[in-house]
Amino acid sequence: MPGQSVDPRSFIRANTRLFAPPHVPELRLHLADEAMDLWSRTEEELGELGLPPPFWAFAWAGGQALARHILDNPDLVAGKRVLDFASGSGLVAIATMKAGAASVVASEIDRFAFAAIALNAEANGVTVAIDSRDLTDPAFRSGLAAFDVVLAGDVFYEKPMADRVLPLLREAEGAGAAVLFGDPGRSYLPKGEIVEVATYTVPVTRAIEDSEVKRTSVWRLVARETADGTAAGQIARPGG
Image (cartoon, rainbow, N blue to C red):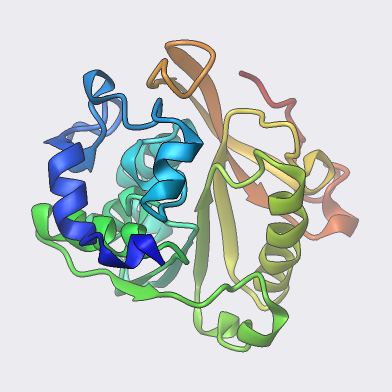
């Protein structure tokens, strides 16, 4: 495949700049500068290199909100074993390590994301393990019980993705993990199974969003039988 000849670390360094996400200024990540128009490149151009869309090159609203919430509430993860699903740039995983987690595993299937997570972890002085298996495949879920907390940022943006992710998150919650995710009210948010934990106004990149700020919430997944708000708290309407 053409993409196999592209060195991920070299590509990332050539197409990004190391700077702080606006809502999480404590951290620095290799992110696409708007002037570099990485996302604006045509699918054909990326395809010729054998590259998937560079989700890892942006600090998405859900990830920024979730990282902010963790840094401001370190007791959520301190001393715990954490899985960051669909880690992308590694923003949430890195924030979790900074907040004192015992360990963090970043789940990703894009080899460019593997490199981005490693580079970003190095830039922030933390260590993050990477699991390259597709954890939405039931065959790979046997280890979910090992995690105290499962995190995900911005994973409900497409129906096929949501349909694969939600069973994984339900299984983790059923195994006893606290399941938290950041989301600005994407179309396939599972509204009947969530409790709003916090809400932030997050600056975002106009090139990949429809506005310069997104009202973004951190949500907790709850058992479906308690999601009516009587046992688990009031369900708030997603904004953004």
